[in-house]
Length: 392
Image (cartoon, rainbow, N blue to C red; front, side, top):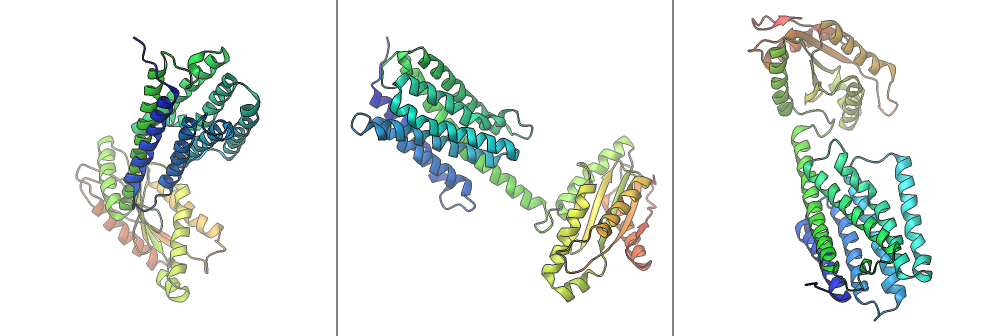
């Protein structure tokens, strides 16, 4: 037995889905800080909800509102929604972003003359062609390497919505009656149920996506130094111990650098602490390009920094230390009130099962003070006498 739904029931069901999603996001994100993404998403969902309720009133209000303005608003709000998702992802290349926005805006603008001059099946086909274009960037969530399982699920929902629109648009070109929500058919309950599921799951997923991003931000705040972006001491120590154990198992050399800024207190006293902060940030920016993804860079506190270099032997670590010093001397930063130099202590060992980070730190600290005694702006190499560590 076929279940046929009238058009107002369909529109009310879909509008209710958008309204429920809107209430869900508002309720979850009420009184939360840093809610710019949620506010933008709420704005998009509110506009989509208004569009669906304008569809409900078709025949009771002018077609200008229920057809032209409502469909245009739905397309614009969908673009708005995708832009929010794009901000949550890795940014698109500027040219790709510009091309996407240009095509999407032209596609939306093109619906206005179509809505006034073409029959319903052409309007359906046109909207069903523009919608996949608008939704395409959201599908990056599926295949992006850094995507979590939740992100991939969200991307699959948008991909499913694209497939539905392409199928509906293709059928509309063949004048299939079921493509119109205003014409009862046996396909209506299935289509409505599917769209409501996509709407509710998609918006629930967005709330969870925001929460996941918040959790990542909290993890970053707990793991990194606010001023410089280097690892904080606790996180560095935990990761360094694991790296030392891994290198001990493989018999790989490990190098460790400890350095600080020469006469940093004088910089603070002469130019102020803001100038000192700029120097610390400049130092971090100068060091990071020389590091690989496996290297660990820590700010211990004040102007003291360390770098753990797994797999790097004595000559390689010496070359790295020299490159860092040369980079500071070669490109003085005009925004800084004064030039500065650093002194570096370093050590290279092949760790054993009992090797601990404290040993490397103590040996490097002695080497660092030796560099200071030798006139600063230099490099000194230390040694360790631990039985389970041998010099590389």
